[in-house]
Length: 356
Image (cartoon, rainbow, N blue to C red):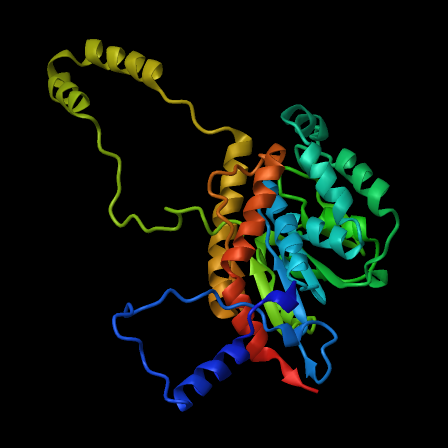
């Protein structure tokens, strides 16, 4: 596919040659002509003699069911002839990235597309422990596909990001059993049991590095493409500068009259409040929302300090965290995000390509 794409440098040379030849505008022609999207220079395809393309790294962020978009991203990059040299994933990003590095992306995609609401519910093996879900059923499925593969044996350099319990250390899992590393990286606190690995208790890496750009660079990637699964959630992280509890007007009227008929009105108001009381959010909702708020704030801060070369933002605002049964739609949205960012990828790839 790369051979069919337009080259940035070629376009620049053609523009320069046209100006040097004294080409002038045609009378009556429109002032502006829509430019074709810039795409990858065919000369920087892998194996091109005399040029070395930058080592490509993928930083795959966390986001539960939205993570199926990573499959679409990888598929779209493959179609463009771009194979990552480094993959780093957090949470669901680690699952997709690890399966791709192990050559099992086809199996993972088939599994994702086969999910229904009832099957998703069956996979949630509830129990009483450190989390609501033991995760053994998911582990067995990963074991069946990935087996006893070790991270250091993978063809593509890979790391999963996890968080250590109590210390809060950011742990880069770069060796050892792949499945255990994936388990540790997606162990959402309070939902899944933490995983003991190498003498440490680990859980979801999104608490410390939701979109692991820094890790990807540290593992020798020269061009980092980051996939942010939560960028499309608008209205989050604002500041409400003035807020407090203000009783409704009818309650204020009751308070004024309370001096005369306090026993009767007090009992009536208490009864009315009990009837009108709105039930609060459930335990799982509280835990997941608290985790998402934390992840969102940390992601903003870390991306501001170390932005990726290309930032992919699939439009996933309407996809719930547990909508695992919507894989077909989510994968398509991931593919579309690559199409929208192809010009940015072309510019970055062209700028970082060197002779030699």
